[in-house]
Length: 193
Length: 193
Image 1 (cartoon, rainbow over the protein chains, first blue to last red):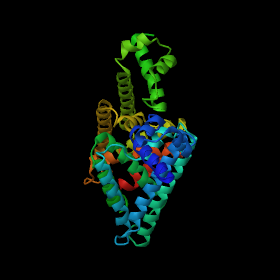
Image 2 (image 1 turned 90 degrees about the vertical axis):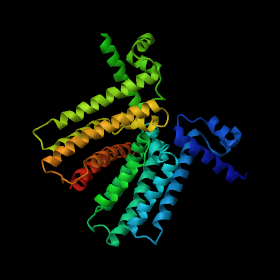
Image 3 (image 1 turned 90 degrees about the horizontal axis):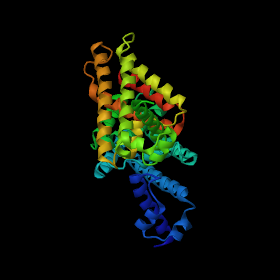
Image 4 (image 1 turned 180 degrees about the horizontal axis):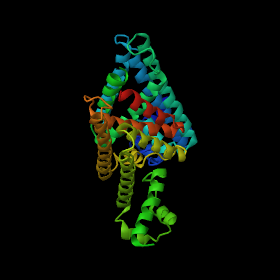
């Protein structure tokens, strides 16, 4: 593997382990065994376990951002339908994982926000960025006349993200897609009306 | 201390530790040191760490249920105002904790739903019970004409609980009450309208 491939391989393995078991519960040795990479190699790419966790998180957030942007760029659909397609596609992913794991950003917030100021500020930036992307989509829907010109777009976008995270939490305990589907129904058919 | 006092003392200490550090991260020895109780005494009341965690959770859920019921029983207010008063009082509690800790039911769901079927089913029952209490309040609001007779009360109650949990998650990262206030505003002034 090239250096870039090895690093990405470690980030991918780290994503799987952190999203399943959390940060404290995942040991570097476990990452090395799963990745089949020697310890020295790990420390070539990452300064510490914290640095590794942060880079895994950034990698996850970048993928999530690209996944959402990909849907928002689909000009065949009207603005609200683009955003709704993103949530539908996310529900498909979560269903394929049998309603386990959830969202690494939400999981790490729960676990790390009170434990590490470094993680908290990184997670806050990621949540703000994510809500900003949603706000952009809602602003386009406003321009196209799909939602009221008086709608408070930033408030709605933050509420949308937070309620989505809450729906994922309930999904983890209910092990069905119902909380996710109910979120989409209520957000798009009641709140935005 | 009487036996009942000692057990309750252990549950109270356990609540503080589990809500702050999570289940895996809290050791029985740490509980014993904080509670100033010998190990044998712990195992007199609890079969295992899992049994302890579950009893801490049940104790928390019972307190939360009573706290909500207390507000719903306040006949000086109209039904929706009773429910809203519960969320306002909860925001005061979370503010007093400087937006740390959050809700033990939400925290344990995040940490344990995929790790222990025993915890998952207990948490699912607690969430269902909580949503059922909210649904009862919304049904009273429906009878009193505060919300539409066509409103899907069970859907709204589940959405309310899930979005509240999501708002608490965002609060943990933002360290302000804004996500909580925004939830109350949007739920009571937009969704229920």
